[in-house]
Length: 303
Image 1 (cartoon, rainbow, N blue to C red):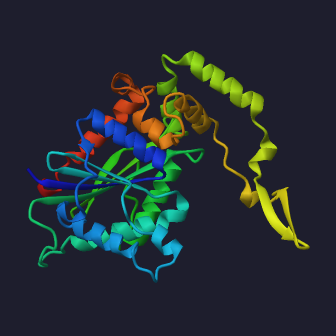
Image 2 (image 1 turned 180 degrees about the vertical axis):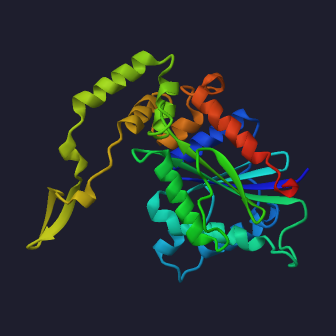
């Protein structure tokens, strides 16, 4: 059985938490307690190198934040999954650097391999469609890959949930969408699942938000020193405005009833508003599960 090293690049921690939950339904288990050196090559060396960066006194905070360390890792047999919370467009260069690192490990014809025999390397992109649409999101992934890899000068992905090989490096993409399969985001999948069998709770949470939401409060209070006095005023700068997302707020309000003080990440990971049965019976979740299964079991050594 080949060793699979699978990197999953997500936009944010909520996506990571959800994919972890999906993978556990498929039999994977958490694998974070393993020492870095005990992970299979070459990912162990990559992780050790990145971890060392976070402990170098000369690095500034921005450089530390740009280190390539996974949020979670899971395992099933010899399939090792590493999930990264990469952010959106601002993390384009960081994603490209990771892609270049993995590509550099795969030998060209006639070169000595830097990775153990019978080892598959793969990178999978998970992004929200948002209001851009699937095709625009795929175009952005394609452009990102073309910029990073010299041998790619064409669009790899033409439709959602595709698997491609580039010099024995397996690449895949999946775009989260709502029911129309074009626009939307993770919360368009999560909220209906969590709301099912908990309609009263979510109706009242929605009412609470509608009754108490105030657009002005999206601009934070700022403390400044004026004429020797400490003054607190509400910011008017558009760049300071908080990002309000009603779907995320609903998850937080409902999740707090069970997991007090926890973030949405913990609620998604542990809340019984999301169950094995719901995931198994969800069409949207099944699309993700089927794609993940196809991607993970796509053996690059046989293609």
